[in-house]
Length: 168
Image (cartoon, rainbow, N blue to C red):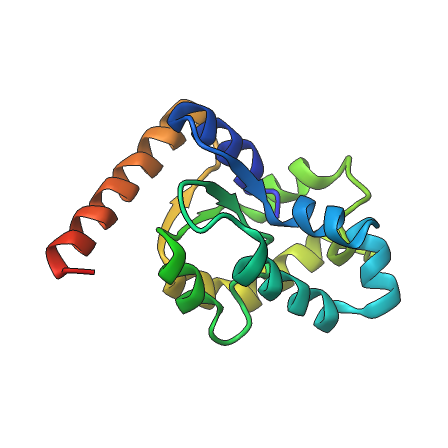
């Protein structure tokens, strides 16, 4: 969260002339309520099940840029599921950058804490090992969208070339 997934995803989709899908927005549309309300009523486990369903059933089969929620890759099996659907790139930002980017938003249920900065560091410590196994990582701190878009395009082309070479 707050690494630039949605903003960069939209920019890449425009650049590549393809659809952009934000899993959080798609889930909100399907459940017809804000995620923070769903979290409050049903909890994180139920939300993670919705994310899995979103990836498996609701996103286009191919030809789209998809921005996944920050915790989507964490449950067992999700990394492999995502990689089977496309190229997976993980965006990183420092805790300070994430706090700055998310401070003005109240729709982040996992940051509804007494100390949001401490919560960000806690989430990063929990998720970082999974993120590092998930795919190529890109640090977004201090980089503009064009630089990031070029970096992700290079990663995408490299991954596609490697898959073709491996016959996948």
